[in-house]
Image (cartoon, rainbow, N blue to C red; front, side, top):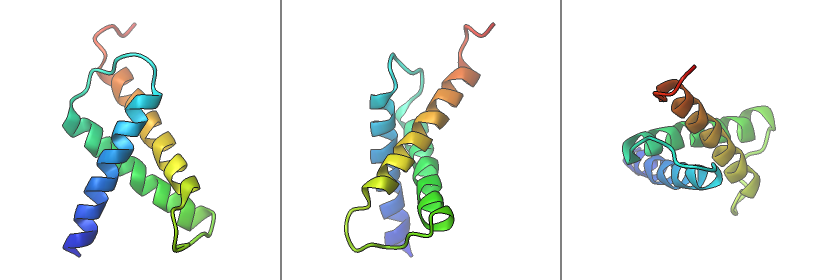
Length: 89
C-alpha cells in the first residue's frame, strides 16, 4: 500500500516534469503543482490505458500509457496556467 503511494508520487513527478518539457514557453507554477498535476495525469493515463482501452499490466514498459499520462498532465498544466494567468482577457 505505502509502496504504491510512493511509486505513484514518483511516477507523477516524472510525468509532471516531462509534461512541462513538452509545453512551449514558461509556465508559472511551482514544483508542488507540477507533481500534483503529474500525479493526476498519471492516474488519467492508467484509467485510459486499463479502463477504456482494456489493457492490463503487460509486464514491460507501457509506452502508450506513458504518452497518454504525459499528454493528460500537459493539458492539465495548460489549463492551470490559463486559469491562474494574470494576463487573462
